[in-house]
Length: 124
Figure 1 (cartoon, rainbow, N blue to C red):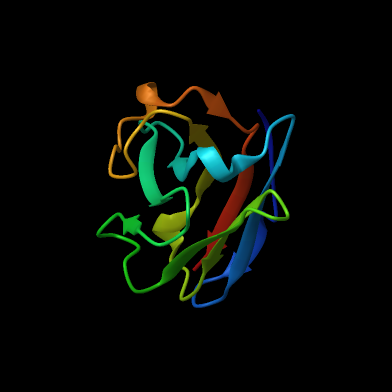
Figure 2 (cartoon, helix red, strand yellow; figure 1 turned 120 degrees about the horizontal axis):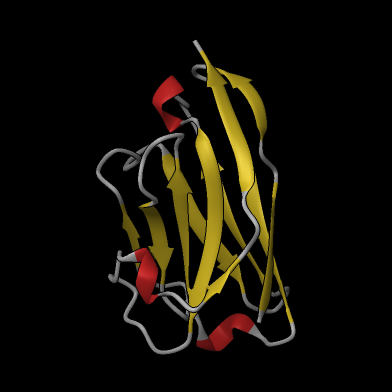
């Protein structure tokens, strides 16, 4: 499956952005889908994950209550609604997918498929 992330940009603290991940090559209904992010000089970290059917979601503590992950298997897309953005949310955001993992897996090395990343910059 090929993944294409989009929707990043520059936003002021307190603002909102909506990231999208479009999949092609395979239908994503059989894949756990996840967002990771990587800030300059830091390791890639888990942001949010969603189960194959979209029923179960997981969030990093740092974004819980501010970010919402969703998916539309019919449209082969996944989204991340980001509200109340903070400067520490500045990072390149990546979507990832895997056919065999459980949704609660947060280790990036476990995921087989990655999008190219989209930059989110939050100014103070």
